Length: 354
Image (cartoon, rainbow, N blue to C red; front, side):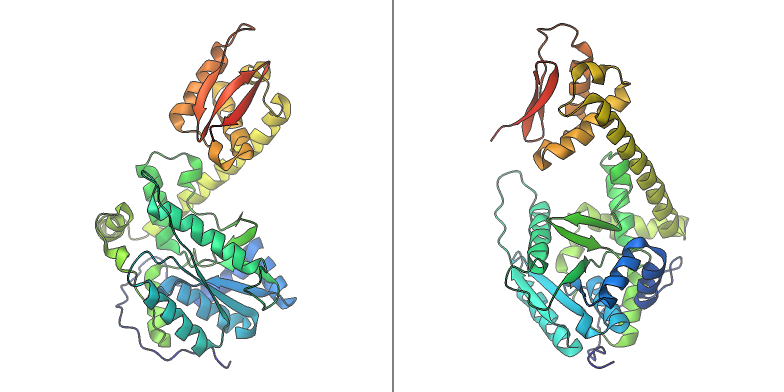
């Protein structure tokens, strides 16, 4: 296959991976065969659409791009690189992506974004949001991408990323959605994102790239010991592997169980919302158990606004006030996310503070 063999040598060492030993092409093939998302992508690519790869220049997204190139051919792909400009190495990432795509003969779209952080805001969260928005804009055909329709955007997240996400969620006291880790596919900003490499370890991806003679760039921020994720990666997970060699598989299995439970709660919320109404009627909410009240309210608020997500304390207080509301004149008012919830007659309303 012309264009799909890079020649640069990687200088990054590849550690061992005892419990997951599948290279990127096999992981991609398994994803296509075993998941509805993979089967849909395969069908749409066969129908003439392109598969987009979010290309950072790191090992994971590089492996996804090369594996997809081997499976579908470069004429079925497009790569999208987002330059955040947050570190001095950003221009090097972009240059590396341009060189890689030129060798593979894969069209590349580069987007530059600006991050403006207000006091107290997380630069990582802002960069992530800007990245997803830029990726979605690139494939929506707003003038920068003229390679034809795109079926979805592939992200290079792999099994180690999933484990780190689950551990971080546990450390933060997250609920089932957090413990479920990263979704294998999701829609955001009007675009469909997929993660085909969740069954592949970081070590195996790097070993495969090294064997193929494909280079990548390591993000220097991944070595910053101040970041909790990096400390988990470099300190906790190596110790964990000494205790339980199959930690990737077992933690991924627990995440899958949590995802199934979260789906059941989501289905229950749909049924309960149909009973309590939209906006929710206070009396109908009171007929539910307190856990179901919280589950229903969380689902309702998620449908109202991305700014309406309550903290655990806010949700607890809202449920408390709802159950204390027994008279016509009883008021309910709780700060919630970026706004507030108040009683309006027999129902609840969410109001933005902006």
